[in-house]
Image (tube, rainbow, N blue to C red; front, side):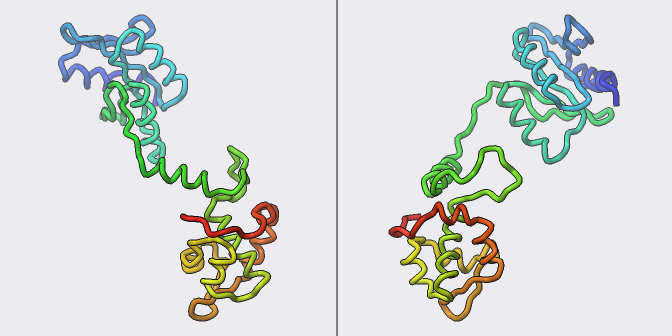
Length: 226
């Protein structure tokens, strides 16, 4: 698909809404006018890109009604692209063959705060010990407060052997010890008998893999409120 292939379907789409449409007007790919309304400006690319986004932002100096038009994005990227464009006050048109799908109008962006996500963010920050992760890293497992708690339990089991949950909770200070052992997200723990858990070979390996993190956790402290 060439960029020029987008022009005809967008032109027809706008004309059906009563706009007079012309292409390539003072560096704008498409300009549409209807009565005394502000002109609609459409910038086109075969795919969403940073240059297209920058063009759209630049055209906002001429009109509040600026759309970005491009071919179908990957499904997993579609939502993020629309969210970004909305945040910048840009409209979105996706062109598939002769079909034009409007995904967003160029309106002022008013983000809705998600109190739950903010609470979880601050909770994770407060409970995580130290700063074990390097920002931007993707090739190593992320050290979360949950993983740190699981490592506390694993380290104690490695030395003490199979132990009751109540004792593990008291000695490690991990108040959610029962849930961590029962869920066994990482495959580190095994139930030996009712209320008693031991360490799996995978759990022993994790202590070697995360030896530096285990050392940084130090000795167990008083129980923390989750």
